[in-house]
Image 1 (spheres, rainbow, N blue to C red):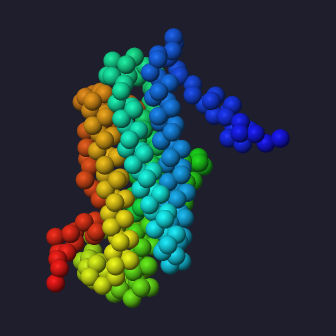
Image 2: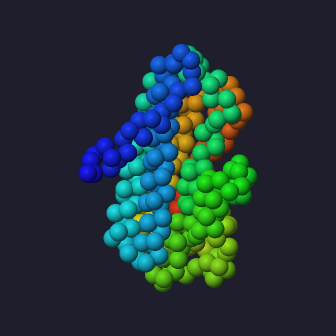
Image 3: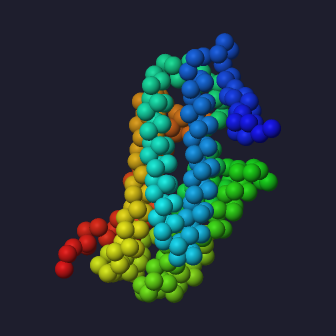
Length: 262
């Protein structure tokens, strides 16, 4: 008989938190649960982003709007979880930090997949995942999948907004780049197409949410370890700061100063 316990695999789920400190440090369980929860939300984001691209590709704007709004709620949840992690003091983290050995959040292949799905593509993250591993497989698939931005540009094109053919025919592995032609099309969207302009604003919300999460992550790391080297040999907060304020949809930000009433 199916039960709540068996449907959600609760017994297996509760067995996945395995602190390595001996005797067990009180805060290590919190650290594990927070990061496992992040990975579960990353899985859901991958699921929602794939569905969002599918809906946009089918010109199904009502479902696309609904899905995008759900994604934004998840992003808010990711940011708010940092508040919980920040209840752990530097001394409490240091009590088990050496047990992490070479493990680092930098190795989260699901977060890199999300970056790829949004359009922040580059080959380097592939090199950090072993050949034939699940992480490598998911990254390679996302690398060769049209990004959300590319799908959105296709939607604009079908709606009659002028975009250069060479832009629409670029390899799907290309990262999002600023484009004056795209910006001109976006300006026309904002002036003439209320529904697509609203979609643009939701994409700005998504981009801002990702940047907000990056900022909170940086401040959490600074608060916890200061300028120390990060786990797994990374440069810690120094590396994370380089990722700040880099939008994944740069054209939507570049046009802000040109949006004026006629």
